[in-house]
Image (cartoon, rainbow over all chains, first blue to last red; front, side):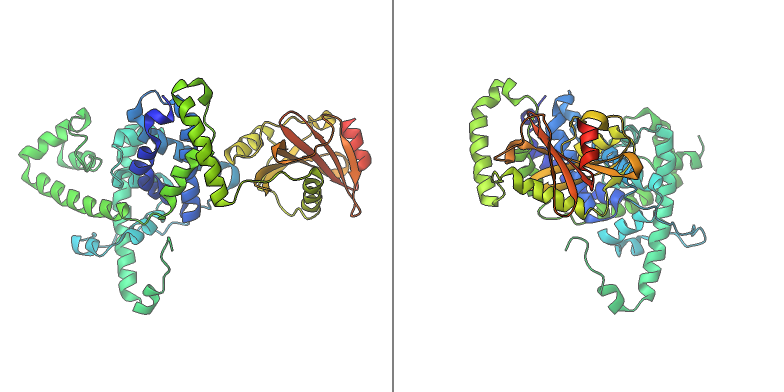
Length: 184
Length: 247
């Protein structure tokens, strides 16, 4: 199968946004996220002959992007370990009302606070592109591990969103509005 | 299966219901039908997850990203295109388009004399302050350079072959990627091997025979070429060392 058969532009149109968001959740900044996404598509152009089943393009792209990220991380120590906040088990659960006030930027930046092994399957799950079995294949871990990480990751994300909302509500409005948008 | 086990499993359930036929979920889904409390919990859980999912799915994507990805098709060479008759007709059109694109973007590199390139290399070697990666593993260096679309299939000349690599870096000169690979030689000296595609040069050193020069600021260079690449090995205060390595 070659790129023509795959209809490259259609593959870009269908998946580039989810791939970029996944890349952002890995890299934590827009420049590296864009570069990871571009590198994944360049590899698709160069290696599309490896794809025997066109229905696997999406999984192939996510897997490739994740492997590129791991390669960068391994070789360059490019993405520093993020210190994680201590667990907030004593907090009240995230309510639907509070969740309604969360926006995409807050969701993503909060996810970036999670340990990578929780964050990666969680973001893939929330991007709604892949089932837990496909996530397990991409991460090369057993499906039970994905289930466990999704369950714990959901708890952690909700707890930390709650903390962020409480902190944001306690902060003066001028400080909040002065934050720069991500992709300006 | 008790209720807690069912909850644990259902938390991985696909938000679009694509796991409905997955045997892993059958027992938990069956429990939903008979357990109103579990059903209520699952409805709340799904509502919360759908809300959070929506947030991740609206995270902003750079508006120009799609255009850049589509354009990549025009500049990334594809494997064995000439072996596919269906593409032969399209090839001419693609080349024409590529030409127009290159002119429009003003990025088509003009061929320049080798002397210009060597001057750039001497200047670069003189003020080299860091490497992109530091490793003694040459395979990793090649892999890294390949991932950054810089020349990685270079041949290591003479006695430099077998020396420990130190690391590498990528530069761009006249629109071409230049790979720099550093090697440790005697007395803790480091030799810098620059590799670039020869196609953007008008003049070249004679084939595989190194041409040695030392500039006023003490950077010695040895230059040679093969069918695809132009090589410059640079060393500070080291023309004799270069000759020992290459001759």
